[in-house]
Length: 474
Image (cartoon, rainbow, N blue to C red; front, side, top):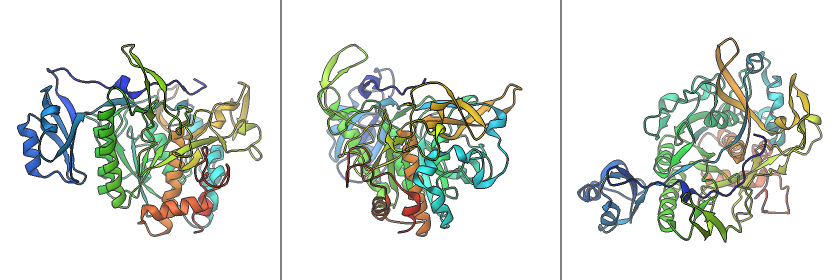
C-alpha cells in the first residue's frame, strides 16, 4: 500500500447493537460529576450490571441483556443518559515493515546511530537542540492510549512502566504478542520515548516514561468505554501527557440516525478529558487521516453498511474533542534524495485540516513522492518514497533463520504526528520538574512553535509546527 485511504466511512456503519440474547454494553452518564453507590444500586435494579464505575466523572459502564434497559435507566432520577457503547475501527496508518535482522540491530553509536539518521522528523522539530540544552524528558510520564505495546522491545522496555500499565480491552493484555505484525502502539510509544541506548531509534523525549494503556484491540478496534476508562486511568496514575493516536474514520454524525447517542458518548469522553486535565494531564490527539476540511464537514453523503444513505453533518473524533490538542501531519517529499535541503513541512496529503480544529502540526510522514525508484540512506536502500514516512519501533519479526527479533517500521499518519507533539510536551514538563498545568504547557508550545502558514492560527498548522529546541528555552 503506497497511498493512505481517504474514502469517507462514518463510524455509524461500525456501530453494533446486540440482540436480546446478548449482553450489550452501555455508557450511563449521571447528571452530576458523581456516581455514588446509591445511584449504582438504581442502575442494577433497572436491569444493568456495572462493570466499571467512574465516580470521578459521573459515568458508569454497564452491561445488560434487557433491550429496554437504556429507556428505563434514562428515566431514573439523577441519570442524564444511557446509550449503547459504540464500537469502531480506528483509522489505519500506512506501514512498511522492516524485517532484516542486520537492519534492525544496528551497532552502538549513540546519537549518531545510523537509524537516528533516518528520523527526519527529529530534524524537522530540532530535538537535538533540546537535548544539547540538557533536556530529554526526565521526570515526565506519557500515557499511550493505543493498541498496547511490544513490552520486551529494547527501544520500549527501558522506559515502560509495565507494572502500572493497563488494558481496557476484554481478554487482551497490554503487551502486544503478535509476531511479524506491525504494532501501532509500539510505533507511537517509540516516537515519544525510545531511549538513547545505541539501538534502533531515539524518541523525542528519550528519558520520559511510557504508561501503556490499551484501549484498542490487537485488530485496531475500539470502544468509547475503553477510551473513557483509559483516560481516567491515565489521569489517576500520574500521566503528564495522554497521547491518543486513534480516530473514527470519517467522523461522527451530529445529525440523523444515532446522533443523539453520539453526543452523549462525546460528552462522557469530554468529562474524562476534563478530569485528566484537572490532574495535570495534557491530552494530545491525532487530527485524522481523511484529508477533510474540519471547518466544513456538513452535507456529506453517508452510506451505511445496509446500503441506506443520507446527508450528514460530521464531527471528527477525537480531533474536535473539547480540551484536547489536535495535531495535523507534515512531511517532506523526496527527503532521501536531498536530506539537508528538502522542505520538511508540507501538509501531508491525507491530513485533516481546519483553523477551528487544528492546534499544532507535527511530523507524520507521507507517500506523496511520485515514482518508485530506489534511494539509499544510512546504508539502506528502499524506494525513495519510503524514507518520507516516519521510522520507529514496530513490534517483533522473524528473520529467514526463524529467529524472533525486535523490528522497526516506517509508517505515516496523524497517528505519527501526535506523538512528536507529545514528546515535545514531555521535554517541557521534564524541564519544569515533572508537573505542570496543561495550560502552561500549551502556552509554551504555542509560543515556541514555528509559524509556517499564514501569520497566527491557520488551517494547516494551527498554532504552528512544534519546535523542541525553542520549547525548552522558555
